[in-house]
Length: 232
Image (cartoon, rainbow, N blue to C red; front, side):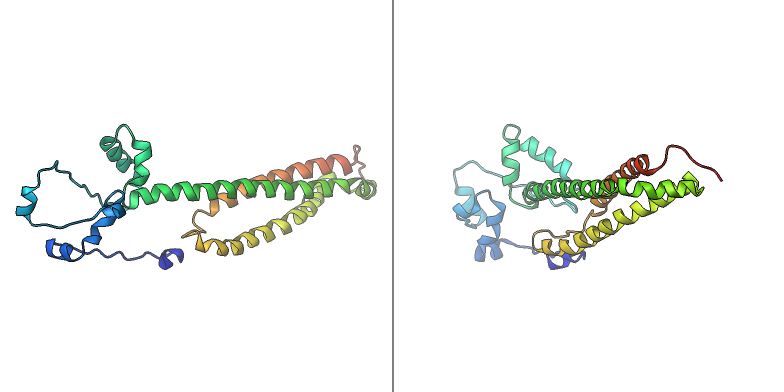
């Protein structure tokens, strides 16, 4: 787990058990049973096993290189084995498959909360910036009227407005990204790789933030730019 949290691949070792080893340590089979803690495992010889008058049950083991990529195939196997109660029993099957499904449920909740809170805070931040900039637009109007009277072209005024507002938006945005990158260190105890796929929320953040910026520029220009352009 420590290696995986640092983004490194962990080497997995396997052990082979024969009848003699299992007789000494039958607990190795507990985790392969459903509700294994409530049952006692006993290893017997083939002759003793043949004397038992009871229905024979078989245990099938599947090993895959990547559970995420093999999930569809594993789902088909479980559906075939348990067609009636597939949804309820699949998360109780011993092994990595059930662990992966349970992990999806837990971390899926974290992901939803992260996206919901992230969008909420983004909306509050960008809205506060927008209203703060627009609230001071009327006091800046006379400056742009003076520049217009001096013969400054509208394209130059528009570039000036875009750069000024871009600076006001860029500083909080950069600080927010840096804060998130450092803040994710706190989630290393809950998530194996908290930085995995981090590009996606950053792309969503930048797109939404850019939309707020463009709307603010257009509204600000409609307020401060004179309706009539005075040429030299």
